[in-house]
Image (tube, rainbow, N blue to C red; front, side):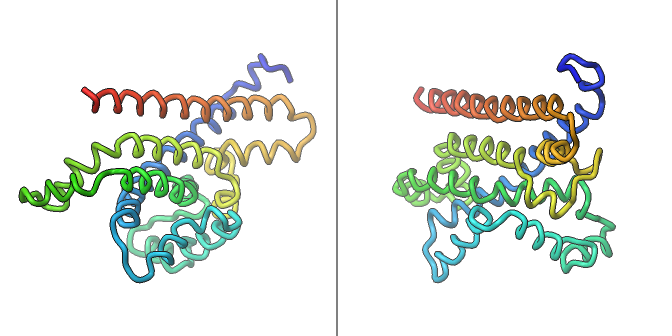
Length: 235
């Protein structure tokens, strides 16, 4: 099949690409608030079990993604502890749905986002936060008006990094939600499925190139936004 073939650039291809972007964006946005909170806790608090919490946060980075997907299936499946409650109370099903793919992608991106945000917060002078506190500002206001603006470049980097990681997620996603065409088949799972069928090199090439373009584009946007923020803070 030619790269210019209308058959190749049909609804099926664009459905895969659109679903992948949707899953990555929703997964990143869902994980971001929790990543900010956890990054702040790890950067500013020291407590018994800090290393355990830090290890658990980063565990998905070193654990086989298939195991993460299996644990998600156990917890969020229809018969799972959390998944069963969600279905019984709200009628929500995550397993084998695109929302489940977003959950898996967000969890796999979470450790990278936490690390970027934590490093950004650790670089902020605690004296600035203490000064704001002495003027009567509550902790939430200190965070929103002092800490958050100073770590905005790190926050942007974390969001873009999380989006790129979620876009390329495969192991946990395919274990938790499979690769159902039109429902949970993202770019990585579509490439894997095409590899099992002869004469699919053209389709694979297109998806690989699109993945590289999206990932590279995300990095460029991240750098551009970070530079804009830094210039704005310097005025």
